[in-house]
Length: 82
Image 1 (cartoon, rainbow, N blue to C red):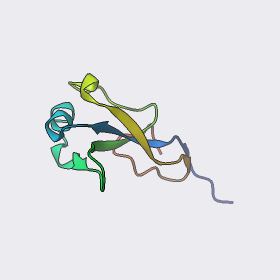
Image 2 (cartoon, rainbow, N blue to C red; image 1 turned 120 degrees about the horizontal axis):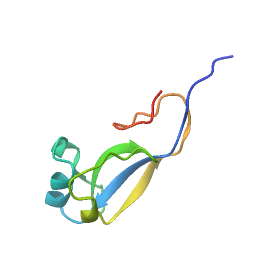
Image 3 (cartoon, one colour; image 1 turned 30 degrees about the vertical axis):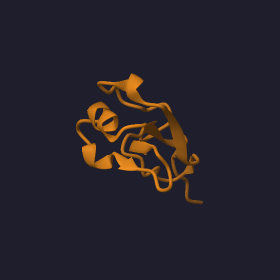
Image 4 (cartoon, one colour; image 1 turned 120 degrees about the vertical axis):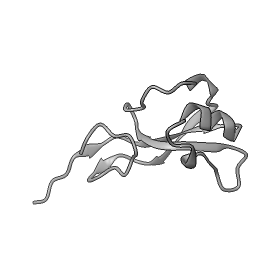
């Protein structure tokens, strides 16, 4: 039996302006991408409950789940482990 770590949902914050995203995630401005077919820009992925502190968290308009939690590696830039 192969067992993996259980991970929470993977989220990304949403921003109305790319500059707001880049100011909130200054170490990863390349991850601030416009969502396909949307007016929103999304930041780097993180595991639910593991969002790091950022300079301007109030600049975000919300967040979205990009992958449901489960077993195995999460693929999130910020993760609780595993």
